[in-house]
Image (tube, rainbow, N blue to C red; front, side, top):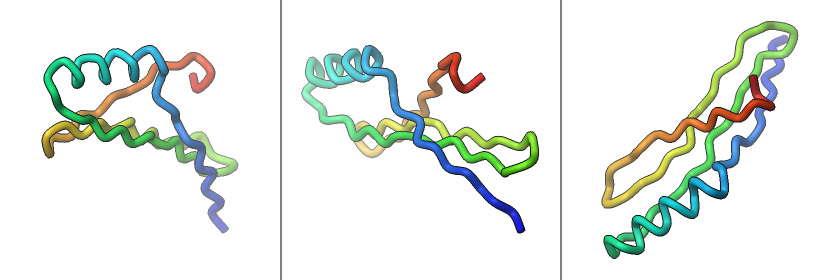
Length: 70
């Protein structure tokens, strides 16, 4: 049986603050959706779903390069 391990990938606080500041300056509201890391147990397969930021119905993908997930 395949066991998939799912971990939440939070966005970095400094990046989040910068994006919120930019959106506040341009009078828009961002929607921030945290990504996930999905690992298949007992294999070396990993899928990283990026963080998504939606501004004015346009989605932007943000990849965090944290050293703890390397």
